[in-house]
Image (tube, rainbow, N blue to C red; front, side, top):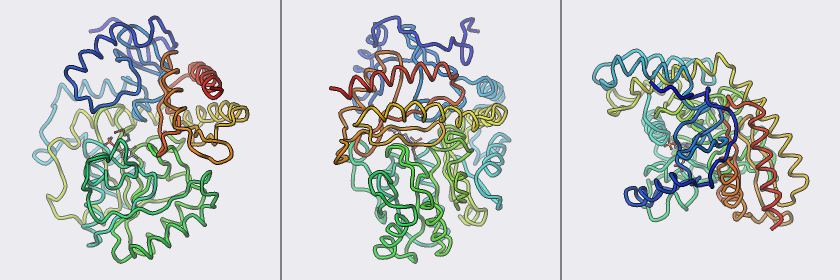
Length: 448
Ligand code: PLZ
């Protein structure tokens, strides 16, 4: 048993005690170079030892404020008590049987929770997988099997994963697709709603999107339209109001499966259980992962019972999907979100970030937009007159923040976005301290 504080009991402060990266991180970087493929990136140069609440403690004892949540995963905080309890209790009972060999209750419990929490009160079924990309792959398989059609539509700036099918669905070449083709066929890309760049209302943008689908694909060939209700890797692009409901209506009218990819937006991140809730959008299928299990690998596809049950028996599965320990973690994470009303916390953190970042945007002219919802906020950098992307800034800003003990992530098709994804349990003083650092760094970097 560790006697040192852990999880939310770690001191919730920023403390930089060495240069960043410190000597032990540098040592690990050296070992990594000799042992780990150079193809894996790293957002910050430090190596983590412990984390909890809103901080990550590195191997040199620096305490960094975490505005990344491991890419929108640790919504309940790292090593959240109910997640840790769930994992340890389950690990003592059984670690694996394979759900397709001998089932177990935690899998069923997670499916019940997903059916209950996801948008819409229709009858639903769920299936569990290991990662977001695998959930997306399966949602596509299910939609094709149900409709008997092949084509899939994805939108510009979309991100859905790194497997072959999901690379085809993902828009951005570098780093996700470069030299990895050929990609899965029958994937069509259409425009989305990107208000700061297209200047369209939601209804106008939807007309443009649907006209493209009708002329270039046609509903009778189309199995599914997949979309992130707020784009993640693409730069936290929030579609104009009315865009998503119009797409959903068109899909329903044409019996096209409407898939909401809520892998990044789900589980209270945007201030609701799911981002679709904001405009009352009810997807036919929804993919989830990331925030579902407090950091354990777990993903799900949830949807209309008639669609989910239409696949032939044995048609879906995998050795590890819905592993019992990961499911127990999910049960603990979901309980934490409910008990601590983390959707409300996300709205509070979002209000703090919005106020502070809008104030900053009024004096920094290369900030094209501050946008997002709840605790999913971003800053897009571009030239004020032409909106030419400033991809140089986010990289420099993220590096300077890390040196001062704040983890921020970049995003955007053009690489010109800083995104903020604090754990939803972060205290306001800690968030304020991180925003002080970020504000100062942006003011300094934007002047250069
Ligand atoms: N769909 C909307 O955000 C994962 C990717 C990090 P996996 N986003 C983080 C990286 O560079 O690999 C994501 C997402 C949306 C699908 C996925 C894929 O989820 O769990 O990474 O497979």
